[in-house]
Image (cartoon, rainbow, N blue to C red; front, side, top):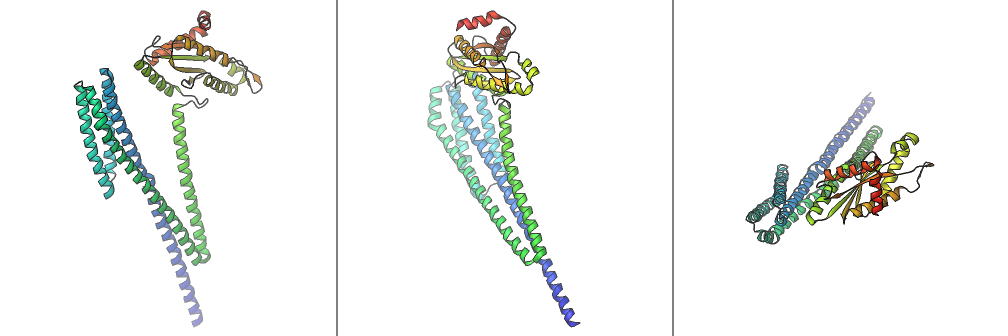
Length: 403
């Protein structure tokens, strides 16, 4: 009886020790996972948010200085007003970024760096205000000199401080990641030790816990990779046609607007070709949409190969394409480019064992002869294309004879 009582006490003590080990394992796992989660949150949320704010502030500061420089170079008062508005907007963004950064809180070293930046920001604002005053007084030469001698060097010093602060947070990210890795390794070793001490049951709990940790880590890594892939895809989809890879309407309008501004400033010309495929609906109806998609992709390749590196091609939608010809000498360059495209498109083509003829009606327009802005220029090219497509052979013959 006493021996049985002693065995029971020993068994009970071992059972209590096993429970204590299991509780210690669970408590240690929870605490370590919480620490790991906090460290990862600091890396992903706080530090990266500060890096983004610093980058945005640096970009806005650069835009502000650039706008001021363009004001000093601009002769047209309306153009100068536009640059002044951009100058003010950029200043607002600089202030907003710094305020958001300050609200997130700083360490003592970060606060000292931020205070030094504040003094530089005040100096920059003072110099920039003097430049604006000189420009208002029509003293452009003095304004440009002050920009070069004072404003730009101070701005560069401010940019260097922002870069130093960004590097500080990037280094902090590396430290936090190393701490997270250390925490993970420590969790693994302690969990394994507790699992061995708790015999089979503790070992099972340790194994299942480690498997869960491994799955969580892989999920976090996969989610981060997928998030970056999604961001890249969204940026691509926002500016490019998903089928052909060409610029879409939005990106093309931006390029055309920039080309017109450049031509307006330097007295140049911009050509625009509006390309609409002939009988494309028949191709889709007779051979199917998979052949139609292949035709559109091939047309995109041929259009790209038919132009200069300085020119660009975009797909507006359906079977409509546009070609932007920059720095042309005159209408004869537009007609020559259209003729080259026609020859390239007329080459023999086979898709899925089917011979398909590719032809297009091409309308052309020239800035500033046919329009003073992008909308007017596109309307002129579109109208010229429809005159050709509707059977106005004189328009086509005039284009070909011009060659």
